Amino acid sequence: MNENNFNVDETRNTNSNEMSNEFVDAPKRKILLVITIIIILLIIGFASFIFIKKYFENQNSIKILISNSFDTFEEKISEKNNQNAKLSLKLQNNSSHDDIIKLLSKIDFSMDISIDYENMLIDSDYQINYNNQKLLNANIYTESDAGYIMLEDIYDKYIKFDLKDLSIIFSQSNIKDQIIVIESIRKALDLSLKDEYFTIIKETVDGEKVTKTTLILDQKNYNSLKKDIVNTLLKDTKFLESYAKLKEIEVEDVKTSLNDSLSSNDEYDTTNLSLYTNKSKFIKLEISDSSNNISITKDGNNYDYTLDMADSHLLYGTVTVILEEDNSTINISVNDDASNISFVVTIDASVQKIASVEKKDITESIYASDITESELEKIQNNILNQEGIMNFLNDIISQSE
Image (cartoon, rainbow, N blue to C red; front, side):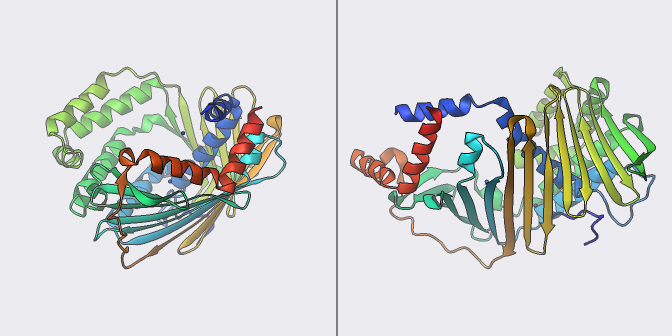
């Protein structure tokens, strides 16, 4: 893969109250760390659709981003093959003295999920270890608009719960309507993004000549954009009919919802999204508003980022993406010098096609409300006998003292 081009193919006693309060009272910066990771992943995922062979320097690169995002989305919706996906996640504490980071660094999480579209089955296994001891192993299985969960060494029956409209996930007949809705939104957005919302200028970044394309979304542009998109969709009969089918509502209900959005007065903080490019080469991405500025630059498989907040608080790090045919690895480093926090999150994922999913024996499954008092006591005892769970709870309690 050309390193200058992007290519992306897409889971409740007194002690409990103490634990909850600990997390509720956690500093705002710790929450921002998680938010930052999610933002970085979303930005990189969208940015990876930008460049294609037919790219020309004077084109609006932000519109190219949007167009190729829709192309990939439509492609993925059309591909409903039986699949198996595996994912593992691990946090490595570098030099953080933060108790929550230390706690999370002892957790290993992995999942293995298989989807059978033909037989409408989902079978997924989840494993969570704490300090190399089993914390929780669970199997979640879905069949015929119902879900079943088995908790290993805790309860020996599947606990049943209802799932509304599960069959929609597997339906092949609604693919056409999904594509129509996506294509309609794409066209409405493209028609509504006026040239006057953008600036395209030439700049020099680190000695390299670049084109900076900026989408300016102030209150005026935001209101105008929203109005144009909604009005375009209101005139699109195919969109209205397909969206109504997917939501299982009447076309008039769709129109009412769209009109209601027009009458709402949203306050919008001016946001600028800027892409720096050199022909087909990605140089830099910036997103800024009155409070924060996010910046991402690329070096090979590495994406260096900074999040500069209004209080002069700075988060920074690197996201490394290694993409192979059926496997990918993402390493996300997060640094916060002011809070003395530094850690790396590693995500490994793989996807492959499968023939089918084997049905589970759910004949003895039971609703949670039907579990007897004696069985509940047994479940509680089994939990207390899990060494990994007790060590985890004890560590949380000790941190709250």
